[in-house]
Image (cartoon, rainbow, N blue to C red; front, side, top):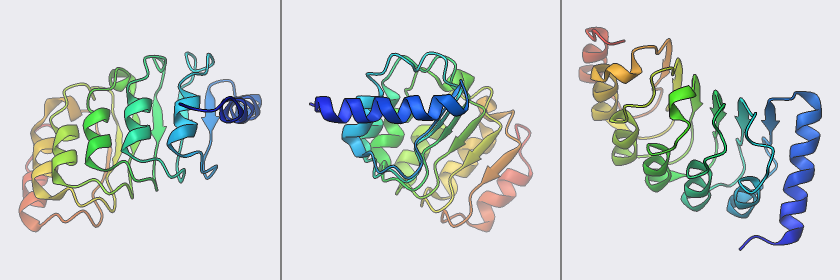
Amino acid sequence: MVSRFKIDYINRLIDASLTEGDDTIELKGKFIGDEGVEGLVQSSKLNTIEDLDLSNNNITWRGAVQLFGCEKFGKLKRLYITDNNIGNKGAFALATASFLNGLSVLDLQFNNIEASGGMAIANCEHFIKLQVLNFQENQVGDETLITIAKNPSFGNIRKLNFYRTGITVNAIKVLAKSKVL
């Protein structure tokens, strides 16, 4: 259970971020961790948020489950969760999040996501508005890229980053021939 002190701290961070933009919460590099995410999802100010940057915050799969299980992100369009450690369990939780239909940007680089987590995301049918997907430095491999290339839900992708993800020429050839992307 998150402490009252941590909830107050997170609320101060949210308030400070919202003064700069009414629809953006920028918590990049605040190292809030899983307990901070638990405090974040208790906030009453999430319903209007379009941009959420939780990059470099020591978030593990435990925090990811809390974040992606939150029903308050109905207007979320851009999610940056780079340089954390959500892993495969976090990726599985992401694939079931209620806000995916509205996302246009999803940045997951450096999160220790492997093939099974990548496949959970690649098989998801709710990324219909997604235009930017960044898997950089996650060892998701060929199968993830091939599945995305064949999944019509990813039909709006304009930028796809699979740098250092363990893909081979075979997956790139499938992507090049994709009728979806």
